[in-house]
Length: 272
Length: 259
Image (tube, rainbow over all chains, first blue to last red; front, side, top):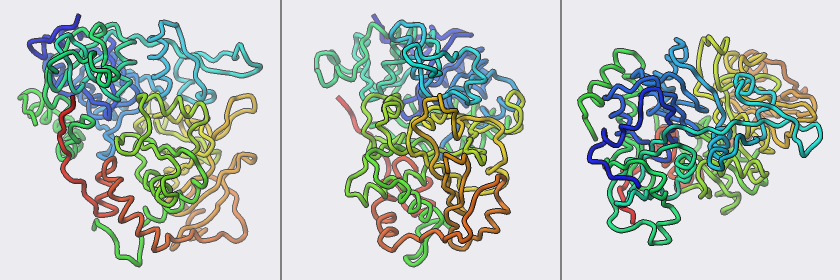
C-alpha cells in the first residue's frame, strides 16, 4: 500500500543512483518539483527513459550530470527551440544515447505490462534508428510470407516517476486522460507520484473518477507538491510558464548560464 | 515586426497552410505531431472549410484531439489505417524522400544534433498521405543524401508499407513525390520565387515540367478564416507561432480544480 510521504525527498528515496527511471512526456504532466529535488540530492548515473519524448525535464537532468544513458524518441524545448544541454551532451559524447521512435517505446512498455518478452511493431525496417539498436530484432512474420517485422524487448523500468492532479489517502492516484501513466506504472517495478492535492475520500468509489484512477497497489509513494509540474503545464490545471522557459532556453545555451539557472531555480528552491 | 498583416497581403505561413490544406484533400482523420505549427494551421483550416470534417487531432492539445487512450493511441490508430494524413519534417531531407531528424555527420560523433526521430520511423510507413514540410529551403536542409535515415522515403516490395510521402512543401515551392520513380517533381513555385532559385537552393535532383505553375495565393475568404477562426485555436498549442504570425495572444491559463 502506498503511503503519503511526509516530504518529497522521502517519497523520492527509492530512486537510487544507477536506476532505470521512466518519466512521461511534457504534455501529460512532468514531475518537475521532483526533478529539482533529485538534482539537489545529486542523483547520478540514471538510465532515463522518457515515454516517448521529453523537454525541460530531460535537459535539466542531463545538464546537472544526473544521466548516464538516455532512451527516448526526441528531446527539444518545442517552441522555445533545441534542448541545449541535451544537444551539448550528445555532441560531447558525455551521455549514451539510445534513439528510439515513439510507438516503439509505447510497445516496449506494453510488453512489460503484459508480462511478455517482446512486442512486434510495423515500420522501422530500413531506418538507421533500427540500425543503431542492436537490442531490436527483425524476424520474418511467422504468420506471413516474406514479411519482415521488428521485435522490441519488454521495457521494465526500476521506477516510474509521475505528476498527477490528486491522490487519496490509500495511494490511489487520479491521472485522468493521461493513460500512458497506467502503462508506465504497470511496466515499472515501482512508481512514485507527486500530486497537486490529496482527495478526501476513495477515488475508486466514484466510477467517473475510478476510470481515470491508478490503483494504489502499483504506487510506492505519493508526495503532495502543489504546482509540481511548474514551469511545465499540467493539463486542465495550469498552462506552461512561457516566460520562464524562454529564460531557461537563453541561460542554458552556455554551461555558465545553466549553472546560474540551477543556482537560482533548483538549489535555492525558488518556486513559482 | 510581428502581428497580423493587412487584408490584401499574406504571410508565407498562410500560403503554406493554404497549400497544405489543399493537399489534405478528402480525409477522415488528420493528425498533427510535435513542432508542426503550419500543418496544424492547415488541418484546422481544412476542418473549418469542411464544417467539422475531417477529424483533427493535434498532439499536445486538450481542445483539439479525439484520443482518450493516452499517447500511444495515435500510433495504434495509425497502425490500423485510421489516420489518413500526417506531417513530418527533417533537419535534412533528400531526393529519395529519406528524412533525418537525428544528426549531421557520423552518428557516433555528430557535428550537429537534432531533437530525435519522434514517431517518424513508424508513421512514415503506415499513414497513406504524409506531407513533408521544411520552411527553410536550402542546400543545408535539402541534401543529396541524408546523414541518418530516421525514416526512408520508400521501402522494398516485401516491406509492409501502405504509407509514405506525397509531397514536400518549403518556403520556395511545392514538390510532389512520385513513389514509382522514387523522386520529387516540382509541382509549383510560390509567388515571388523562381524555378532557377529552387534549383540553386536544392541539393538533390528532381523532375520538373517545362512550365512550372505558380502556387495559388490564399483567397480573401481563406485569409479571413485563418485569422479570425483558426489562429485563436492555434494559440493553445503554439502560442509563440500564433502571436508571431497572427498577432493572437492566449489569455492567462485558468486553474480549475477537479474532483
